Image (cartoon, rainbow, N blue to C red):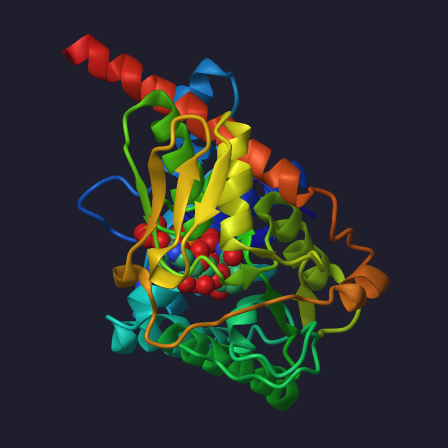
Length: 360
Ligand code: NDP
Ligand code: GDR
């Protein structure tokens, strides 16, 4: 029997990679999308637009439904209609800095939204049928209590986003324990890709490197370049989400690469990839990234990107996922990840240039 999956947040970075993975595994894939005044389906167009699919002689692969994590009756109706074997709850207001501006909306979507989903499954009596994956995060660890961070490390979130996700984490565990539901948390560390949103630091950097190289951007302004993260490749990480729902026991797992780098290191390597050697001068907010060849200042620190409370360093220990799920944490290296992102952004910037010239 073909399995049925429902993905919330299917239009996001992870949702798009996960949809592809599940289609490869012959799942019937459903996704929840939000009504938007402009297109928000760019990452999954290749999976659902009839004309594109007809050209390629393939049938429509996914079914999209309007919905929102803030609307419980919508979630109940959709789950009743779709009767999913697996639900991947990826929908979230996922930007840490923005969560300080919209804290109430963030808890409504990321925290209470998770409760609404779990309750919908319980209300419909699907506790034994439907397995649920909750997108938890390394932001739960926040202020360093232990390095590296593992499943047993105490939580200390540092943003409204982290606090909202903490509720999501515990309500998922509580429903597992109270109602014996197969509901699990993937505690994922930062994972990036060519599809990463443009306001997250890695993508902001790779796009800027490509544009500065082409001469369409002059400078890159960043916040805390001393922050350190454990960055992996999103395409590798979504495999773990699936593995967690196939495992015999419902359990929570840290998913990380086990390697940590600073934002400054990411910038240096990304610019090197486009042929620009940077050297760093100055300290604190006066620190600058300078092109060694031309002497031009390309990177500056702008305090508007600082957060009221910062997570200084995150490093995960993925050994439980490695040992129990057989997941490989290092299939894409840090350097390869940067290469993938730069290659895609250079191509995008060249396309932008061609289009601009056509209309000039
Ligand atoms: P994105 O920001 O790329 O995608 C978020 C998705 O959630 C989008 O599809 C968005 O829709 C949707 N969404 C936002 N608000 C709502 C809402 N109220 N109702 C329904 N849908 C909504 O995130 P990622 O793909 O990077 O991350 C996926 C999940 O994993 C998120 O929950 C994130 O918090 C979590 N996570 C991510 C990590 C990472 O490094 N990427 C690490 C750890 C956890 P739209 O396109 O319309 O905006
Ligand atoms: P993060 O990712 O907050 O870890 O959350 P982000 O890329 O936004 O920031 C990483 C680190 O870089 C520093 N930084 C900047 N960040 C942004 N966005 N823009 C800048 O200009 C900038 N300069 C420095 C930040 O201060 C931070 O320390 C991501 C999201 O995907 C969450 O949804 C997810 O849960 C976590 O990763 C794990």
